[in-house]
Length: 158
Picture 1: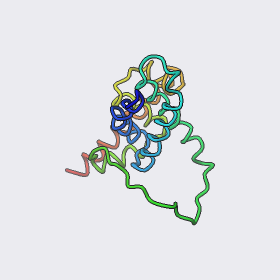
Picture 2: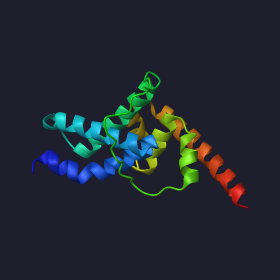
Picture 3: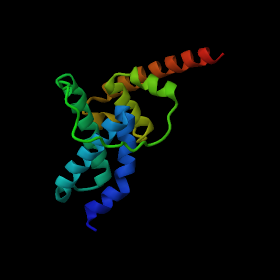
Picture 4: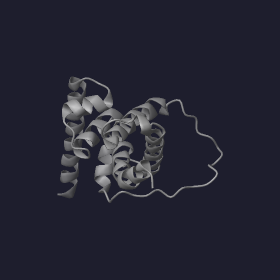
């Protein structure tokens, strides 16, 4: 087994978890994870330092690109050649999934990096390719929106 094979075996589930937090969709998460791993393996000999950190940075940037280009995609009437069953990372309450869908893609990314990857604001800004102030803004607005959603959920349960 080569070094990158061991890396994939060790990191695939963790990357899939982050991808699911970033995308909110198990199919998109699987695609994002596979693209990330392909990019990492392609550049394996040039990676210096922690390949896991490099992979997570690649994943965040690929997701930002995916969000930017989503408006350019055109649905077709032809289904894909074959369906791939997604691997679900874990159970999440339906209200939380609904709340996460109300966030902007950048807010969701910032919150995923904070709570899934446990990164500080500077690290989030580095991964997202933005300033620390912008990262703080995404975190603050995303957290406020989730709190509003949680408060509404609490009211429903009473």
